[in-house]
Length: 359
Image (cartoon, rainbow, N blue to C red; front, top):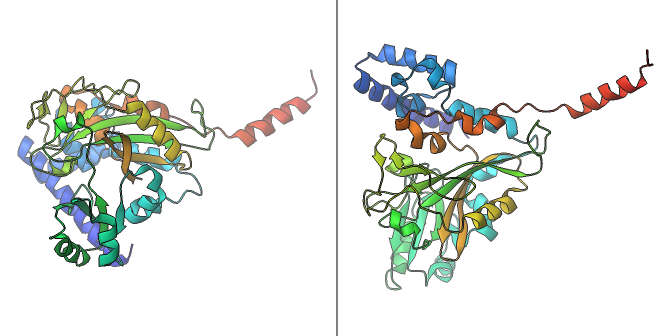
């Protein structure tokens, strides 16, 4: 990033943190100084961000209970621990580069707005009738737009996109009919978090994709995105069975037994093509030594990758359990506590031991 981009990013972070400070002030009646002091203590004790403190309702929990929650600092620990020495993760922050890298698993046509011309646009999307525009710098679903069009309006859509901020244009996916029970018009996604390492960690098999957790993300209202920061709902998925095992919860701590718009029950829903999705991720992720968050859509013909995140947040795992006061650190403890095995050092020590004369 340029220095200007860094400063802009810092301003966004500070604005976001101020929102969480105000949220806790309103909930507790504490002064701003008291809230910041409590947040700093939670950061020290539980590696919690200001967002974690506010969304996890940490003001209601003692310090020992806070430590049992899965926080952003713990997610950062995992990211640093499992990042391969030569693994460059910048490609996953570039939507266009990431799509090109994962093209065999996308199941849809795409074009960058950079260098866009009418001929290639018509050739790629002329018969699709519905496309999605995603800005390259957007996060949390911000700036995403969906275009419905006919052949008569296709050219006007092209001109609008050609003058938009740099982004990615994609064919609109039609999700599996069972997944459609959980939104009015958005394509709901599964967020799956994995690690793959080529290092030696005690108790963790190397050169294998490990599944840490998965969440079922549901859109609400008329939105086209299911992101939590845009009013979405999250529920936890059993990694062995593909069954949704919690009620839904949103970023404001509202719990949903049924989807608020469609009335379908959330807990107990089985994700279609779940095993096929895991196999796809194993195949696609085998070359990436890193902690990764996969956003996957389920179509009538199977799973497809929407995008890949190199900094998956902790909230996907933890939020469905916040109102139950259940900390989910234990779900990933094996990976948090894993220590690298210094294989060469151990081999040398064994060799020295073998050379020692018997007493």
